Image (tube, rainbow, N blue to C red; front, side):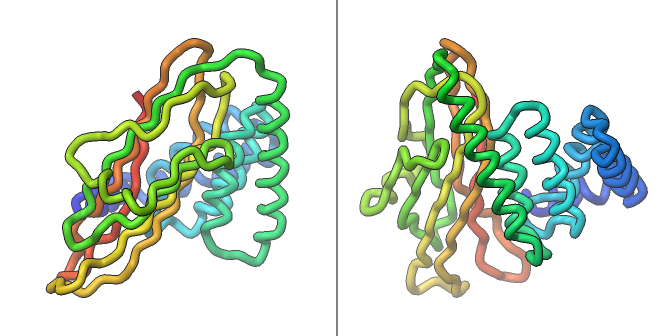
Length: 239
């Protein structure tokens, strides 16, 4: 609940006119191929107006424009992540076109990685601190569309106050796509009835040659309002 209220506070602090200005300037700049302005304003707009829950209705178009901007800057991983965010948002009448954008960005990423001889070390750490009303059933983590972590029967071991290392490897220097899916079952006998919760999140990240990168993934759930069950979420932090 605290994080949800914090997100709402961020939106409230930015006046509607400020958000309108960011969005309108960004979209107009994108149409004129002024990508420096477009990326700056649309990134600011999505940071404030597009939380994972209850995003602004203009977020889909903002993320589509960001995806095109990332493509033009030669950053297909970030383009894919933006297109994926857009695809998850309504309206869905033009999803087929966005799926084509995703496939194009995916191929561009694969081509770019194959042409990159340099590599950088990456460490993934995971911690689940979702409240006791839930139990962690499974976690799957994929890097560049290939699973690198699958926890099923032993997923509960990740419910801990400490981060656990779940992956260590070397990746091509440059951009990458990180996808995380978690499933939490609701424990029986709870005062507040709940249902199985499936969470899927996608991010882009960059590696540098011979420079270690640690990514921490944290599953959490803040208390909801009016006695409703908490909603599991996942956040990603780079170290």
